Image (cartoon, rainbow, N blue to C red):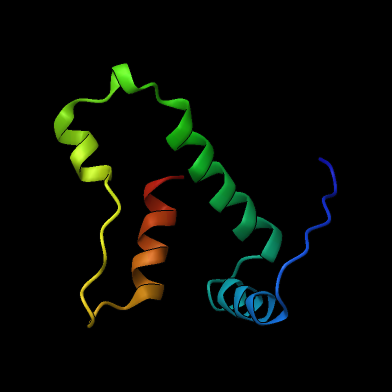
Length: 80
């Protein structure tokens, strides 16, 4: 395991630490999960993805009443 230094806005760090704590995770574990999810998404070649799945992966905006924290946790679990 290696160490990594990142430059991140203070308010983002505060939010990330609180979010990780609320979910009984370390900040390192939280960030690693995010990076792994991105890694998995980019390891799949375009030839392996059907048009239907590609349409499901498209970035969309969430409805205004969406609990962003809950949705984010769902995505983390989905991509572990």
